[in-house]
Length: 453
Ligand code: ATP
Image 1 (cartoon, helix red, strand yellow):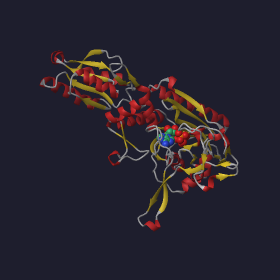
Image 2: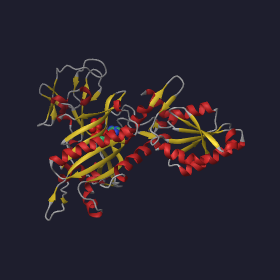
Image 3: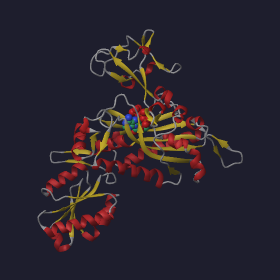
Image 4: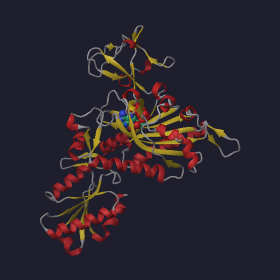
């Protein structure tokens, strides 16, 4: 993890947000390579979830919505984290980190932990329960403090007339509130899906593990609307679980790094009938980065939206199967999954579709004008022909340039040498095998189109 964090900063994947002013907890900026990686992940997702299908359409909803949305969706009441404080170190911890959810009382919607309950503090001593506020006291125990995760913002120029709104805590609601618009304005028929990618914000109390838990992040989500019965529900839940797992595998995630984890009854979100996470075997433990949720009719019925079926008079509230992935967590896990080092080099074995730079072009020597000119021509030509970033590098020697490109995951390097001037061929070097082959310059674009996909 430390190596990835350092590499991300050094090579321009990810920087701490507002760093020159001392940073700001839970916010990250993506540099030139990180911006490409994220864009590539999102493009592949959109290709697979929208372009590749005939039953899904896209939407791009506003970040700020009428606050009524969050009341109706249940987020103002239930979108919260519970924190508990340790008296010894004054550390505040999410209850899921302490494995004490079993004290959750569904009827009272509260957790009540007996004061003498014996657990260790994550800081390495015996936990002593403390109250965060007076309201947290209950007879014989303490109650973890409830913090709402919605991030408020204020609309309006006159301070005394400002309206409190929220930056969206999930992008999901934008698909639901537009359900009727989309049904009316496009030709979708159930079963169909609405796909969306966009920013979400959460007042996370304990941001951490690099970008894993941020306060601003991006989600890529599908809301798939189906007929409201268990047969359909189970069928599509299983279908989307499988599709999403296959997508990560197809982009190079190693099977042993992935697993499904079913949510226990007491950890399901307020909207979910059933839920399973796709987890990654991260250095900080198995960690969720996508959820497949059976939302039933929770959202549409709360927004009082229905669907008119094919048959006369048929009207029902569809059920929803949701796939909700995080772009930032995926990017982090693709990086971790692809990291490889031996005593000679560090390589990011990113899938070519995700690699920030597709091809790097070098002249063998920087001071031989004909080599530089030919390399520049190839570079400009590939920039037009290949969909993605092409790099040019004439610094240092070839070994150093290979090292530098391997470290950021560039699948191919092209070197123009003296033979190139004679026979119009170049050396193409493969990142993973380090094998080199001579390819005719006129065939280069076709070669990369084949090998980058
Ligand atoms: P967690 O339990 O880790 O807080 P969650 O179950 O609340 O996550 P969801 O509400 O299901 O997460 O959100 C769907 C996806 O959005 C997550 O799988 C994750 O990839 C992403 N996501 C959620 N919260 C964050 C965050 N704070 N930082 C980065 N990504 C996030």
